[in-house]
Image 1 (spheres, one colour):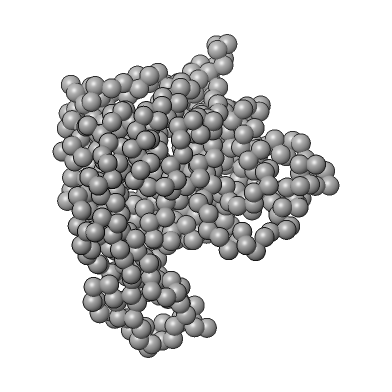
Image 2 (cartoon, one colour):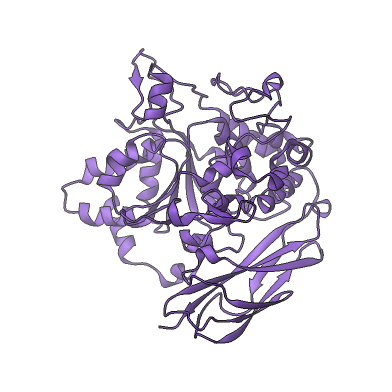
Amino acid sequence: MRPLLFLLCFTVLSAALSAQAPKPRTVITTDGEVDDVDSFVRLLLYANEMNIVGLIYSSSMWHYRGDGKGTTMTSAMPMTRELYGERTDLRWPGTEWMQELIAAYGEVHPVLSTHAEGYPTADELLQLVRVGNIDFEGAMDFDTEGSNFIRELLLDNDTSTVYLQAWGGTNTIARALKSFEDTYGGTPVWEKLYAGISKKTVIYMISEQDATYRDYIATAWPDISVRYNHGQFAALAYPWHREVPEPMQYWLEGRFMGKRIIQDRGPLLASYYSYGDGQQLAGDPEHIHGDSTRLDSAKWGSFQPYDFISEGDSPAFLYLVDVGLRSLEHPNWGGWGGRLVASDSVVGRWQDDGEAADYNPFTRRRENAYAQTRWIPALQRDFAARADWCVRPYAEANHPPTVAIDGAPSRTVSPGERLRLRVNATDPDGQALSYHWFQYGEADTYPGEALVYLEGPELRVEVPWDMEPGQTLHFIAEVTDAGVPALTRYARVVLTAKP
């Protein structure tokens, strides 16, 4: 009965539900790399911004437990095959670290939850933790509690999109999908079941960390939409010194990270890994970053105490956080999770290459990572504010402004038309607000610049005379308060030329 009920749900969709904009449902699968841990700490501070419906341990080319029988494997991925050769297990951090961080979250939850609505309790999050396919890289030969959890979620009566985040390998996700094929493939319900699952599922991959996407998902489930972040995440990962322009590096350095985010911000932020902090990730001898004697010989350069290490997986959930940039409406529009463009060869696959690059004003050229880097100052100030929320009462912390477009956020225009765009903004703390408008040219399909006049919350625009039917212009109002740290929210207007 369950498959038939599921198919019925896809056939009969309530107009009332479709008109609503609920928080996006998401599942995190993670291999426990040190950057996964740090991404998880930040995720917990944003747990009110999305509907987290699963937290699942998985494996990857970098981390797997082994089967305890001495069985060996060699990586299917060239980099780790060369690095590690044949192994029985690899740098496995265990299956308790999420629960430990959730317990620390539980300690700050009473204060944190006074600053914004929607924070789940620690007990609610603990109920979502499952162990998936962890024995080896790419393990997907049998069902696990983690793969079964994803399977049941994709089979439930809620037809809203489920964003499956792969912070490690896609193998536990692949196993859940394979179980559908094993059970229903070749049966009368398969065709509609396949279509329903494909429509409901979006996979967000931080690089390919095993071969299960290319070897199984891409071929057996080609209609599942994919977000593939292969390079932009580097702006928030180990090589950030190379990717982030020097004038912006302050926001990732210890003088900001230590003072404003990590120190004296309660047990959750105290668990956040940084350079020279003396901490050691269990099970991973390659986590040398906390050793203060190795700050000048670390793999990625020279560092100072409390410098940022990596949150390479954070773009996967930042993509879901609504700060007014509307990036969830279209991967190409760009936002706090970066900007992706449609693949030339795979329908439904969005990736960060070629036209996904944004113009870097510091180097004066388009660069892939800058689509993520450009948001770092606002991201880090927001992180610092939420760190404050863990220990300070509402009156002693800063909170972001609320920004809304006056009128429709998407409009059809004629070449040569003159119009006024205006935002209405308020600040919950009564702080003064500053306004900055910009044309996000990389997201436009019109190749030039519009003539604009800035007047605080208002932007006057003259639509270019040579704008062709269907071409678009994106204008973003960036509103920042005068608090400490200063917080920013946005409103985006998309103009489309009449056909």
